[in-house]
Length: 449
Image (tube, rainbow, N blue to C red; front, side, top):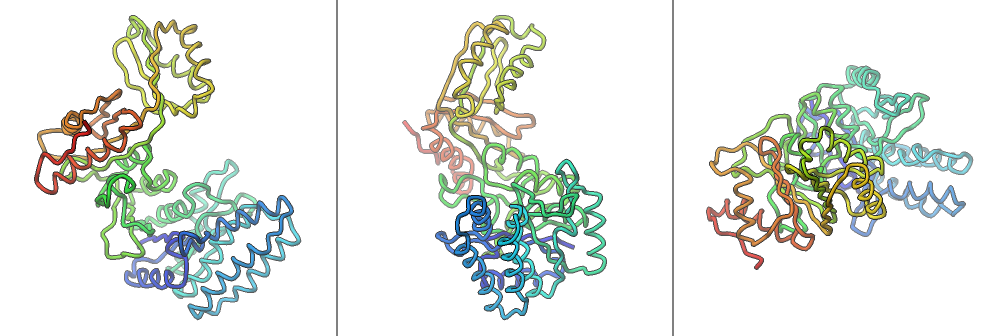
């Protein structure tokens, strides 16, 4: 069996509902369905979830929330009517409104109503059984998912009714009240259910045809990564690629269940398959990701390499100021510490002062306006490795890097360049390793000089 999750863009209106139904019924293995709340119909529209968050904020400040509520009600009623369903949505909406007027409702309860009502409509439309997420997703007192209790509940429902629709984004706290899942939302719900049911695969349906090899804001129509390992995915996500939240990956990764990213609007597109298995890449490249606005702090001290615990002591100073370390390139008597420029802005002087006083650092070099680019690679048979190809491209571009660090097994190569060179380098690497490779040429790079 398969667990299939459909995001807000897939549930935005009655036409999207029809697409989703067609997709689900085309494969009888799609037995457990997770849905998000009604999403945006156009770029100017609002997600129902965002409107519910706004209503809760209005309630806290005694602002009239009823116009927003009427908009939400209108959307659910419209979907119900256009699909010719019989679900008494007005009764559910009226009950929620009564609570808003007479009680101090929690944000978790109110916001979760978007998924709750959407799932009710989809369950009737599919003739599947609706199961409230409160009945199958359980949290413990530490706020973590109670997998043992959750698994027992999910399997019990599945054994009784094999075709289920479950609202995403929330579960129940130890007191039986609604609790939101936070970042990752409905994606996490789908992953948890897939793990609990030992699903064949976990399908995540959205409005894109998979994970792209590079940022489409920089590369025009980048290729979709057809297969990627969880390890490669982690490397790309860490450096800013817009992929699944880590909390939505861990449950299925641990259970060795593959994720399939698919496009509701182009269901025939292959999409991206994510699994524990690394697949050989035609050109050795999986993808390119990166972020701007870092700061590099290089510490110099004679005989640093002979001093036991020096790096640990230095990192402890950064940690004491609440600074997360992004990357640590090192030499014999120097180490570099790359951090977010914004995070360290008002603490830089204090940290550098402490490094000199406590560790005897003799010299500190700071490079600002730095961008980090992660070139993620996979297994390949070519003689020239990932780093060799990238170095050749950087040379052709006339780019001088301030950081160049290769990870273990050639899984990734971290490049540090000036902010204003970021787009040029990403384009150059993509052209040299993807565009030129596809066209069969080796000189598809345009120099920046």
